[in-house]
Amino acid sequence: MIKVTIDMDKCQHYGQCCFEAPDVFSLDGAGHIVYVAEVADDRRADVESAADVCPMQAIEIS
Amino acid sequence: MAGVVIIGAGLGGLRVAETLRASGYEGEVTIVGDEIHLPYNRPPLSKEALAGGVEVADLEFRRKAHVDDVTWKLGSPAVTSSIKEGTVTLADGTVLQFDALAVAAGIRPRRLPIPGPQAGRVVLRTAEDARELRAALVPGAKVLIMGAGFIGCEVAATARKVDCEVNIVALDAEPMIRPLGAELGAGMRRRHEANGVNFYLGRTITSFNGTDHVESATLDDGTVLACDIVVEAVGSMANVEWLDGNGLDLGDGLSVDDAMIVEGTTNVVAVGDLARHHNALFSGPKRRIEHWNMPTETGKRAGQTLAALLAGDEVSQAPFSAMPSFWSDQYSHKIQSFGMPGNATRIEIVSGNPDEACIAEYFDESGLVGVIGIDKTSELAPYRKLLMERG
Image (cartoon, rainbow over all chains, first blue to last red; front, side, top):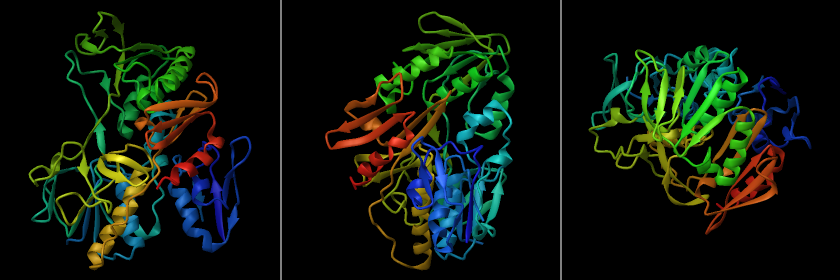
């Protein structure tokens, strides 16, 4: 499993991650990011892309 | 030692290196940076890093394990090059040999030749620039900002947060008018004014006054504005002078093809702010796009190109296609854009109004080319999808 964390002090809810891995990251009705904290290993490429495109570089993957 | 030399240790250079490795290239990779820092994220420099509390180490990009073996040459810019000989010479005298070259040297702020003292005039591009400006942003300091683009407006908002007095002088009729258009630009101006910023629009500065340090600025209409510090945010220039003498057109960055190969070369790619490219999603001439996401988009493509080239494989000439997008934080407000709103010939506000949360659609003769939302981030996703379908 891949562990996903968003540093909520950094996150500005721009939603760029949602376009790269919509099954992991999404915006709720209030425009706030919600995400799945543990995802299957075969989702790594898209989760990495989501972390790459975050303007605030708030996404950590381990 | 030859391999790939990447000039520029910012986001674009990092993405080229990562993609080279991810695509199976195992040769030497050297990344040259004019700054002493490993690649770091610049957008916070005009926002929270400027307000205090964030250091450059906190802004470094996560570096993936497979780029652990690249060689970093930091703190020494490229000064000359010979593409024919396959060499780049750095300011410290080092000569690097390359099989392929990636130009990721980015841009620097434009400086205007205005008479008067230099001391107290700063720009904002690097972590050091941010540190210098941060030291000057103390309560009551008189801050004069030249230029009403995104950097100027973000610095204004940050300076007001720490209780500076802020004046903005710009030739444009409204702040951020080129991408936003006049109506949304005016809406943002009113938000700034409500937060205490004064605008002098349609004006230029003819001189700075003071003995050793800037004390005031004289505008073209005779107005004199007192200032302790001047932030010059009036556009950018591509860092390409070190490529002079190679027969390339250096007039506006570097023209590249869909594979990011520089026009007139076979083994040189260019990425990021300085790469002038076509975009299959939008018609018109090649353009440089100084948006945060473009170094990643162009850097990944260039990395694939170089990996194929160096493996002797065919380089894909599939049309380059990327969605330009930008974001800006000013006070509690968030501006977000997709597409090329600056290309629009017609703008329609479809939700809200410029003084509240709103969405504007931007059209040219081909149809929808962009969308901008103010405080409407969660409602823009469908527009991005519509714009992606143009390609």
